[in-house]
Image (tube, rainbow, N blue to C red; front, side, top):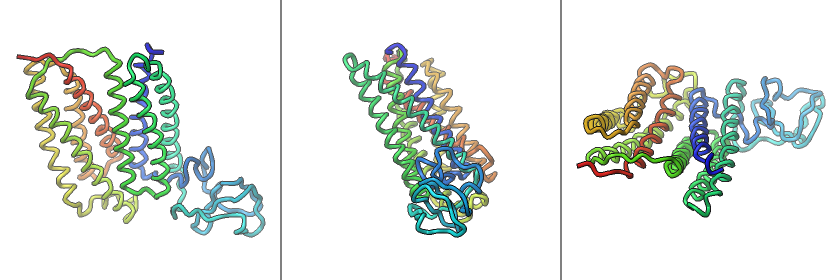
Length: 340
């Protein structure tokens, strides 16, 4: 099991990034409330495929916990029942956690797939903690990190429920993403510990630029989540179909986020130049520069081209991957040989 553990760590990292991808598609398509309840979807383990399945009808069987829409209100079946010719309120209770009452089969199944990806990742993490336990006697840092990541995944699941129950409160969504980044950092530290580590040359200026780059990226991600909150509020006000209003009259945070990109580009280009000129051998720098370019292009497209399809998902996912690469590069740069 110890020999396979590095592969399990890699699969765990990929599974978390798949959650980021699925979540970004949910936000891109406005499918966050495709399932009004959690962990089921309209009370079903496998979601409905038509509005007829969740609409009250006479002489129809419903199981306990099934959710229907009647008169633009969500109702939950109190027990297994077969409806009469008229609606009997005694058999139903109003769903009180929120008042969202729309059905769109595409949104429902997009959100459902997002949840399936999270469930699959949960099983991967069970293998992760099982494998990490084998290192208890030789290196206790490994099981500590693995169990911390696992418990944070459970916390993420609870946050996911809270996001739905609160009808997509922006602040909770932001916390949801930040915790995901913390899980990525923990898993990357695990990968660094159990992998064969190459010794890189140390360069003082490169190391300082790297630290500045990581700090700048964290600031940029924080600003990005605040802008995302602003966009979410605009969507609630004008509707998801009016994406051209999403950045109407943006606040200072948006302009700071946009202009701060210039500083990030210059810092990382400096890292790229030093890595090439001093032959430091950090291959991740090339990918970091590429992702910053991708982030910049998708950001420009979202603002000037009214959110072309896929740009939001690419922007969010590339930001998460960028953070991971920078964090791992920082781990690599600590194990160095001094370059004269």
